[in-house]
Image 1 (tube, helix red, strand yellow):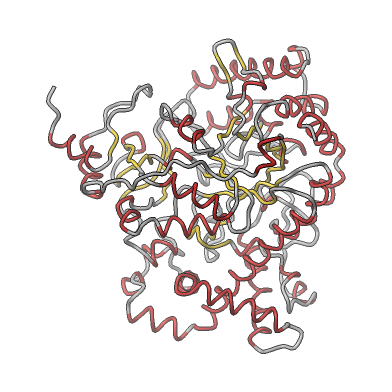
Image 2 (cartoon, rainbow, N blue to C red):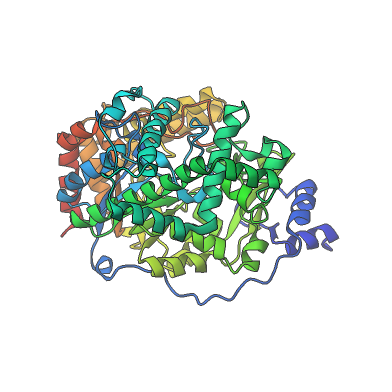
Length: 590
C-alpha cells in the first residue's frame, strides 16, 4: 500500500508510526497533523561515538547496596513539618555503618513555593534549580532559635502539610535573609562570599528563576495562579518593560529567592560530602524528572525551548487502561539540536554535580517520548524520536563521575535495554517484574549492570503490596475494572508464593501477615541478584503502608504527602531495619 503524504510528513518529523510487539492502535490522523505541524522536519541526528558511560572501577569487581527514600517523608522533632537535609544527614552514619554505599532520593527539583500543594517532584518548575524545602534552617548562618518560636510548625504524623511547612520555612528564611542584608556581624565573610560567588556563577539563568519566583508569589497574593500561563499578558513575557519594572521594584524579594538557591545547593553539597566522609562510595543518588511543568520558570524564561500545545504521557497498558497524561512540557528535539544540547547538559549538570549516581526517570525518553496534543486524550498520543540524548547522558557521567541508572519500566521498545546496556546505562529491575516462561527469574540471571529493588515510589510499599492495597485503590478510582482487579489479585498471590520459594520459605506463608522474617527473607532474595546495585526502599522495611504515588492521579489520592510511620530517631533504632541491612550486607559480600 502506498504511504499517504500525511504519514510521510509524520515520519519526517520524527513521529513513530510502527510499534512492533506493542499491539498499539494506529496513530490518529489528528495527532499526526498536530505533531507534524509543531515539529516540522526533524533535523539530522548528531553523530554518536557510542562510548560507554562512567562506571567506577571498584564497582566492576563487587556488588553493593544503598537506601532509597523520599526526603519529605522524614519526620523529626527538629524539622518544620517536612523532611530536610539535616534529617538525612542524621541517618547517614546509621546507613553507612550498615554497609550502604548510597542514598537514593526523590527529585529535588524546584517546584512552586508560591503554590506548595503542587507537591509532585516529577512536575518541576525548573529542573536546573532546587526545592528550598530541602534546606535545614538551623544550619543557615544567621539563624537564631527564637525564630522558630515566631512561626507555627505543622504536624506531619501522617501527611505533610505543604502549605503550613512552606509558610514556616519561608518566614524563618526571610528573617535570616534580612539579617544578611543588614550586615549582621555573626554572618561570616566566607558565607557572604560563597553566596555572591554562587549568584555570579548562576548568572542570568539564576536571576531569571529568582525573578519568576518573586513574580509567582506576587501573583498568588493577588489571587492568581503560581504558574505563568494565566498571568496578565505583560507578565508572561520575560523581556517586557512590565517585568523589568517589577524586577527593579522588588529587588530584595528577587535576591531572597536567588539566595535560597545558594543555601539549597550549599547544603546539598555538604550532604554529599558527609555521605562520602561516612564511608559511602557513591553517596547521593539523585533523580531526574522526564519533563517540566508547562507553566513553570523554565518555560517562562525560555519559551522556545519547550514544545507548546503538547504534554508528555504514556500509552494505555494493564496498569492504566486509559493511558497516562503527565501534563509535562517536553524539550523541543529540534531546538535542542540547534543549541547543541546545551540546555540538556545544564539540566544533567544540575542533578549530577552533587551526586555519585543519577536515576533517569522514564529512561525510554532518551530515545522517544509519548506526546499528547492538546485536544486529544492520552490514548491518542504518539511517540516522537528524541535523538542525541543518550550521548549527552554518557558525556555527563564522565564529566561528573556519576553512575547513570535508567528507569526502564513500562512500555519498553524492542532492543532498548540492549542499547542501554551497551552504553553502560544501568537498567532497573524490580523483583516481582522479573519473570520468564518458567516463572520468576533466578537472582543469578539478573544483568550485572542494573539496579535491583523490591519496589519503587510508583508501587505500593511492601506492606501494602503484600495485602494488595493498591489493587483495591485503583479499582475504587476507576483506573482498572473488576476483571483486571480479579486477575491482579490472583497474580499477586502467585507472585508472593514465587518470592517465598526463592527465599526458601513455604509457599503457604503467602497467607500469613507480613512479619520480620518475611521482610528480611524477601530482601535477602533481592540481595542475591547479580545486579551491581541494590536499592533497599526504606519504606519497605519500616512498615509504611501508604502509597507515595498512584500514577495517573493527582488529588484523587494524596500523592507525595504521606510520611513514614517512624521518625528519624526511631529509624536509626529500628531492629527490623538493622536486621534487614545485616542480611543484605552479608549477601552482597565485602
